[in-house]
Amino acid sequence: MKYRITKIKAPFIILITLILSLQISFLSNCYSQNFTLKNDLKRDVITFIKVKNLIVIPIFINGKGPYNFLLDTGVSPLIVTDPSLIGNFNTDGLRSFKINGVGDGAEIDVLLANNVQVDVGKASIENIPTVVLKEEIFNFSNYLGIKVHGIIGYYFFKSFLVKINYQTNRLVFEQPGLSKKIKGTKLNLEFFENKPYINTKLSTDNLGEINALLIVDNGASHALSLETYQAGVFPVPTQNIDGNLGVGLSGEINGKIGRIKSLKIGNYHINNLLTNFPNYNDIAAKTNVKNRTGNIGAEVLKRFYVTFDYENNAMYLKKNSSFKDKFEHDMSGLEVYISSDNRNRFFINRVEVGSPGEKAGFEIGDELISINFKDISSSSLDDVTGLFKSIDGQTFLIEIVRKDNILVKLLRLKRRV
Image (spheres, rainbow, N blue to C red):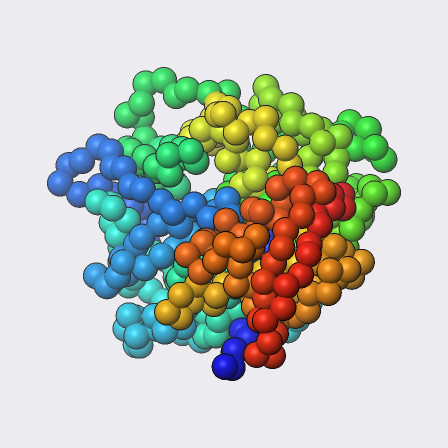
């Protein structure tokens, strides 16, 4: 029996906020775009899929679909990451362009599209600015375990009051001004390049308490990413581990993973926060926004009922029952992805040096088939990776296939940061 290994570029999709720093007149000169609800509706509700803290919603493009798109506050145009959807667009309306992204790599080719109609639930928009990638870069489907075709963000959020319930997987969007009173603590938003920012405070062992300008990025699965301090590199905590932090348009993003003492967000204080520190040249050196410290991601946002009110430059947070959950990093040192054919198949794509996974003898390309004698083919990727960040010292017997041989490995989790 032969196993085909699909290589993916990175374990965590981070910094989608920087996915396109497009300064393209084509996009800025489009018509004024807004979603509108059909049939005089005031409000609509849809159910989303939540995986690795990210929100996936169904959308239709030019009447075709549904397609799974990440809902992301950090992106401006509609981004189609699946090149197989190019046939949905009028070829006469496509223009080729080269752009630079973030990460360690070269510029890439994209298509810019106009005259694109998108439907989300009972809402519709005409002429939404759209970027189509000519080749698959992010491999969202392998990373998330479900087919993902692209990313949608700013034009949806700016059209409605958007309420996200991470616990029931419900997304409510309504006409601005419909709700007389919005529940939660209000935070003021500032917008740069159509991305929402908050001014807040954080505390680290190296710097004490400092002011921070953070992108609010629900399309980043991590908790917090800190990039710059006083126009230089943000100091990394003494206790840290190397991390493959994500993938930008131009390649992998590497850096360190550590913790900060606390983050203040509205009236809430969040302590001992797991934090990414990407390499300065991968991220911060390529941004156009001065004084930006980093971004706050969905690992924090999922602990709240979140309401976005772009029209009034505001966001509202009300803590939910997940608020006090600990921030834990993977304790195995194994990067796992999923390859779906007739059943879910889980492969190891990366083994961290010195990690429990390396010490247990796991190798890149191993296929995981059972954990503690339980077949995992019906499990989700969240189920499997969740086990690897469960309890410090927890042991698992893991059955693998390697070069047609079945082996059993004993993995003992260890908190590394």
